[in-house]
Image 1: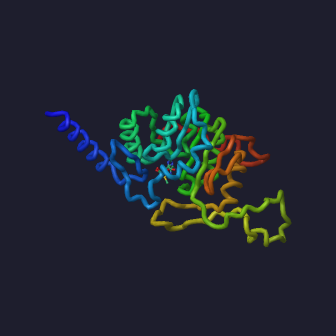
Image 2: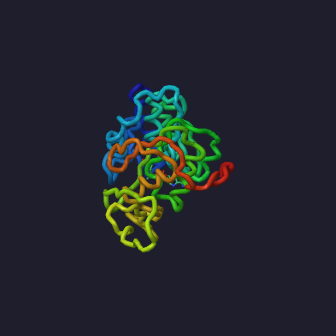
Image 3: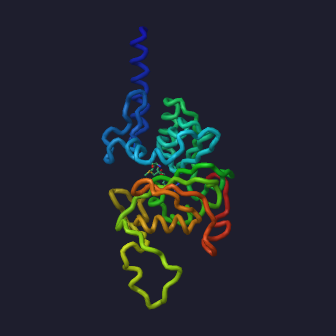
Length: 259
Ligand SMILES: C[S@@+](CC[C@H](N)C(=O)[O-])C[C@H]1O[C@@H](n2cnc3c(N)ncnc32)[C@H](O)[C@@H]1O
């Protein structure tokens, strides 16, 4: 077989593996093949990442990274490319993890992949220097519990957070308290609101709670994260801080083994 023929065979084999693992949510360029060329958000997540890449250190040497809801591994692979010592990607969907395995193999990026529910992050028994929690919160029935668990178990320092948001971009000052008779407060623009999706939104029945901007910031604070920078409209860079007095439970949800 000539060199050209063997290259052609390898490309056909890769194309077949990509096809067999579809559909893809991440548009990755694997061996010159786009995995999700018709993505409704365009060249996603590459263009999304361009908007906040500068807020993550260029050099992650010696650092550990956890990518929660890693999907096909775009961000995990990017963090490895920035020199992270160890990158762990977790997702509860085995098909996405299989995509991430193929992507890391093709990219030559050694990332560790585990099937894990966000509620079970305690099973990792490790804190990471950088935690990515992108595009997951609104898929959860218990979003504040998840943030509490990240704070409690896996986040050592920096959290990069993103959520789908709807409603106003305004953020009102949250009072420490208000009298029972003050009912207007809840209708004020900028009051933190979580929109409940009982059925489906955007054709996706895994959407449950969609915060407005004020609610995503308030929930992060309530879980003990300090907002450092709002990188773009929906990307927030946080540091792990102290949990507000009286907020959350202590060990909110006992660490359990892998499911
Ligand atoms: C909208 S995608 C976001 C993917 C990626 N983080 C990004 O920003 O491009 C949501 C991902 O979170 C995963 N996911 C949703 N709920 C989860 C849960 N309870 N535990 C672990 N992963 C979850 C999904 O399987 C999916 O891969």
